[in-house]
Structure formats: C-alpha cells, structure tokens
Image 1 (cartoon, helix red, strand yellow):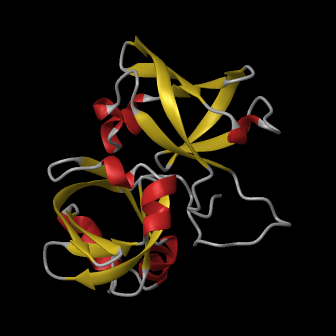
Image 2 (tube, helix red, strand yellow):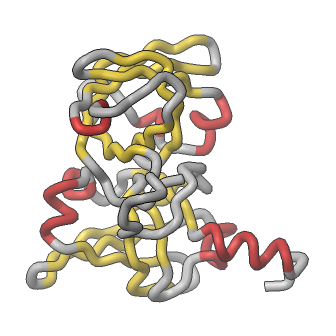
Length: 197
C-alpha cells in the first residue's frame, strides 16, 4: 500500500526482456535507505518487488500482465521514474490509499500554465471515467492528485510548483501516456452494490 507521495525521481538503468516479461534495474538513493529483498517499491505507480539491490540501484521483475496494463512499454534506458516505498503504519498519510495496481493508461491531451498552477487534461479509458469524480483522488504515474474537473471523456488535475519539482509530471508532454489508478473505494462500493452505479 502506498500514499502517492513521491519520495524521489529514479532512472531506468537497464531493461532485460525475457519473452513476454522483463526485468528492470532502477537507479535510486532515498528509497534504498532501508530496503530489503521482497520489499515493494512503486515505480511510476506500479507496485514492484525488489529482487536485488546495491548502493545505488534495485532490480524488479515485471510480468506480462503489468506490461499490458501500464505505460511500461514507453520506458527506455535513461527514463526518469517516480519512486515511492510502501507506506509505514507509523508515518503521516499525506496522499490517499494507492495500491500500486494500475487500472489503465491515460493520454495527456493538453498542459496549460495558470499562475503558479499547471493544468493537465487527460483522457482515460472509458471504463475508468465512472470512478473519477470531481474533488476525488487519482494516482497519475503514482502521484496522488485531486481531480479538479471531469466531463464525459476527460478529467483535469492542477499541480503546484512543488509537485512539478519532485515528480516526473513536469517532463510530460501532450500525447504522452500515463499510468492511472483510480480511487479504490469507488471500486469497492460498486462491487458491494452489484455494479449498480
């Protein structure tokens, strides 16, 4: 479980494809301070298991299901990625509940500056729109954000300069794909209601 508060920006050092699967090596520093084999680290919002690590890197295996559902296929050696360790029970909960299980990818339609804010308009898959509500939470590449606007085909988030500085959102451009994880509470409510929302 994660909070969507990004701890650092890492970099893809190596990608090894293994048939339909892959193994990545990610350079990092902060998230390695207390790392152990088997720990979970979210990479652009994707919950991955640490399979090995050193002073400045960790490796993780990526299964075909993850490759199909995420923007992993856009990653290249040198790509910057958002990193977050799993949530600790005794720390502040600054974002929202993020599982690290990506629901789909969205396409950035536009990016606009407005004073100190930057607005991102994103088209998600149609099946995710019912879970995206104004003033609700969404994780974009693992970053916990508040939805500021929703219509029948898109939603918008507005980010402050700090978020631009400490995440990879500032490097995104219109046409880029991003990983999306909708608020898990909406999915549970739908299940409990038998899909009647």
